[in-house]
Image 1 (tube, rainbow over the protein chains, first blue to last red):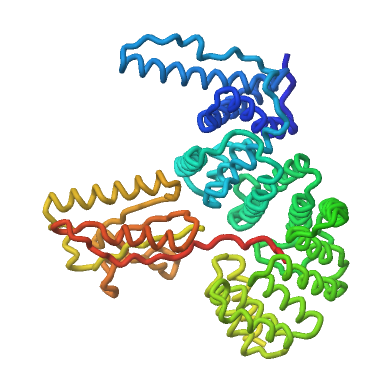
Image 2 (cartoon, rainbow over the protein chains, first blue to last red; image 1 turned 90 degrees about the vertical axis):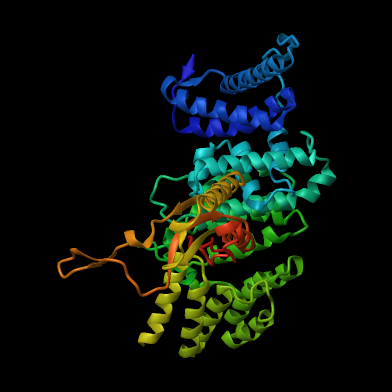
Length: 414
Length: 130
């Protein structure tokens, strides 16, 4: 008995991936090999289910296929050792009976999320492994999203798993205390996946995985698993409130449209309402963290019907809070923009001086871009042109560079 | 973040075709090993070697848009011999790889210390975070 493959089937398959991996990894006590086996089961499902329909028990099907791979692998390993040592072994005992409904643990997805965002991993390897093991994506899809060859991505994931193995992290849920310590790293990886969805969006007309959507899906799951955590909800709200503006952010030639020039009727109202609802509930819990504050700032922008209706004094107050919770050069920069909107561009330029000696942002294009905007607002066109051009030379984004050069050209032509 | 590592060699007098067989083999083995290492570290996007300059043509569009080709162009002293595109976690890591490639063995196995130009590859803009 099977169900026909439809739009929800792919989602179901990806949601099952970490649960299946949890069951297989606990049974075989080998996370790395189990993860490979589940990947093969996923690829088999993507090949078979659309044609033959979704099996009656999709989870059982996947566990069975992955377990069979594991058993085959164990058998061939035994056979190899037998050839080498000529010692007979009883292979049958190594294949545990497949009881597909056993071994389910709702915490598995959470265990995997903490494992894949392990602090010993570099950001790029944590991202890749999280997308595969927790997100249920194939290596080919991840490689394609990052525009790198599949073989390279496979190696990156393999090395990430070696690092985790070497760290000796056991496959069980970290204690509440450990979780609290590791959660910022997990949220940061989810945030990076979201960001990457934009950064690697060049040539987005090609059929590619939408990493921003994947990040939202993974964060949504994390929120379900950690319902009491206000920062997880804050991050989800931030993603939704930012993603809501996506359609308005670029023009027909993929040119960048700044927030104050966007057609706000293109903003996604459903995402904005969901984000605000999540944020309101999160803020009511007390302890306000950096994601909630950033989401609150995004919400103030999203709530303004026109750019000139933006409540800048409120945004300025939120940046002052953010500066206390999570100080850094980017916060200082954005705080200066908000101050400029409330107290005038001269105030913003004065605050920016604090960043000149800061090696974390000193030569960064954003500092020049913001200066250029503030000089433009003051009517100092020459200084604005100079800083727009400096910023254009320093950015690593094509649409951003085009935007900055166009701004400079516009002022130079007046 | 992706970077391109461009390996430049002198247009004339690089002398690669006249290297001893042993030196050539050592050099080729080094480059193969480097590519393998970058693939295994999960960082290699692509690596290509380019032909010697005598195969190069300079092309411009003519009046009707047809290609007009010139032979070897003598303006620059250096030419691009090959490149790597790597996807790495930091600029420093790209520089480390470039330094490694720069020290590829030349005649007598001595490091060539070729100049490698490292430049970021442009991407889309990050999300509009505030």
